[in-house]
Length: 392
Ligand code: MG
Image (tube, rainbow, N blue to C red):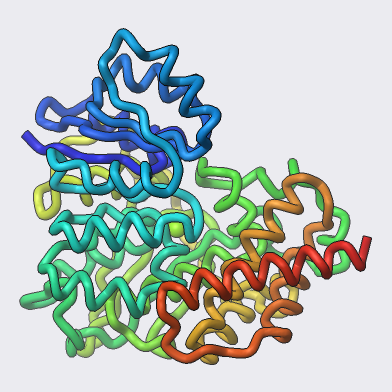
């Protein structure tokens, strides 16, 4: 029996993780944490019977408490509650599937408590990778990627002798090849993008994902965050990470080794595969679903990313090369701007404009502590709030 805690159980990764739990006989859920969707959480409590749940929004937590009295589940709230779920004693693996930097503290606490992390919260690694990776090493736990590209790289690396995460540097890697679908606006000019609607941006051609990551895919910010995530996960310098557009989303990513051999992972775009692989690593298990037929696909095409029309990726490289607290500002500005876009307060191209503005205004802190990271995040929000007030 394997027992897990899921942080972010009502999101896209969270619900698909529960689908995996449903399909396996030897997976148990000890704790679930959500932001505020108590209707779905109540159903999950009744089906999966966790001993502990967290509703981040306190008022909603109180409301839920009344509804699930009969189940005996303990309901907690806020950051303290989220951390309690990450530390629930029965769970050996924590699935971190919250959106945004809110995941930093619970993930760090879970690692320190000796838990493996199935990791689907790239913002945490982007902003605090320099704090998290040494902790992983110190406590001898596994950080198992759930993001499809990073899972693909992780799976491809199993073909390298003695590959173990945290063991650095991996001398057999020549480069990581991170594939991208290019999102719904691939090939569009910036002038055309100013007018796109929230609905246009939420229409991803291949993957079904949460709202925030779907917008991030449309701006190419997501690929930028993934380059940073890969850098930390696999300890490979950014110049050895190549982004290639592969619009059909058949190749989920690849590794080129020093002998020139490339190993890639292919499949239908189904997040349940990386989720299940992370939960049972290194074992592979049966997963129901459509199989990839190469002869039906016929061809797979590749392109270089267009950095000028969709500047999300270029800004990410700039933040990475500056280092220190700059990736925090890149990420925080994006979180803030995407929320504003989803509320229809700003246009699509303003998302990356705001990221650029916030980065230009920031004074870099080298090797930021957790407090300094959270401060840089808040400072970015405050700056954009001011900035937003001025432009409107
Ligand atoms: Mg991805």
